[in-house]
Amino acid sequence: MSNDTRILYCHCVYAKVIPDETRRAVLAELSASGVAFDAVADLCEMSARKDPALKRLAGSGAVRIAACFPRAVQWLFHAADAPLPETGVDVFNMRDEAPADVVAGLSEGRTSEARS
Amino acid sequence: MSGKGRLDKDRLRVVLYEGPGAAPLADEARFETLVALLEDGHQVTRPAAGTAVAAADDSQHLVLGRFDDASAVNDAGFQSFDISDLDPAGVLEGVKARVSDVGADQPGGWKPWFPVIDYDRCTNCMQCLTFCLFDVYGVDGQQQIDVQHEDKCKTDCPACSRVCPEAAIMFPKYKKGPINGDVVREEDLQNESMKVDISALLGGDIYSALRTRQSEARQRFSTERDESKALLERKRCLAKLKKNLDIPDEVLMTLPSVGDIQDRARRAREKAERRQDRSQTMKDRRPTEDDWGI
Ligand code: SF4
Ligand code: SF4
Picture 1 (spheres, rainbow over the protein chains, first blue to last red):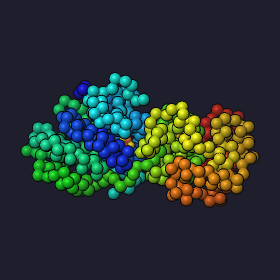
Picture 2 (spheres, rainbow over the protein chains, first blue to last red):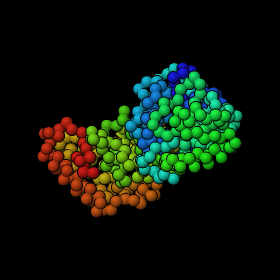
Picture 3 (tube, rainbow over the protein chains, first blue to last red):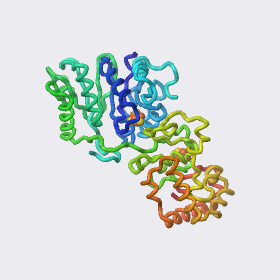
């Protein structure tokens, strides 16, 4: 993994739309991996409340995000006046993807288009 | 709890530090500590040599660690918190106490349910603004539709996403796509349960007026509107919404009165008439909040 691509993990804590076993498996792997990451409780809540931390999370360059649907994540950041960069963003969907695939994506990135 | 409006003070950035001057945590302790903090609504950064995290900004940082020597952390201007003898619950209690001490926002307490607009799809037709009974929507300085009062949205009500003709409104915590942010497919746009004709809710020919923005359509809108018929149609439609589309009772019970609807219709008609007078100069303009009398 390139040194300047960050990882952002969303725990989706205020509604159970991500399976609990997926959240725990992804977070456990990240926690044990020795890589750096930012973790947030709930990107939706941060967006609704215009949390200035979103600017920090969006504005620090390339990032791989473990959350939910890429379209939702993109516009949640936009709604908080903290748009994600046009390039260098990979979003992995913990609603649909297996934990192992999310973890592999976070460490290796996607070869395909970032936000589709 | 800090409520659900926009933040009026920053939050604390919690950093779980295991670098020079601090002993590493056991894998299980690190994981359970992260879970405890996240479940309580905190933001946690775990730095590690050789990989990046979001850059430091002017928010307050609280650096947790099993410190032998916290001087490097303190000298850098960060507040440190020695967690050597604490289990995850103890760490959480300590963090909460420090959040309170520094007057930072205490997170939590609200299921964040609110519309998120996909501006790649939105055509700025204003149907959502016209439909929403709770003033969630507004327009920004560029006359662009905008979500302005997220906290007024009714939890678990996805009604406005059904009236959007472009499937541009998402509720990321909704169970099904494309409302939850999943890719929008052609069949979603055709699906009757995705698309509720707002003209049936409010009466008159608003839908077509919004689409064509032609003076002819505006004329029809202003002359054919019948408020009592509109109310009946709206009630019928709302009963259908409740049954088929997950619209909660709370929303249905907060219907505006006949007077409210008549007043809204009257203001819309007056605006439409005034707009007709200005039709030459308005020709290429998109409809705005002002145009529709909201
Ligand atoms: S962005 Fe997605 S994963 Fe994160 S809190 Fe919102 S719905 Fe949950
Ligand atoms: S109804 Fe949909 S397309 Fe129209 S303004 Fe609202 S979000 Fe945009």
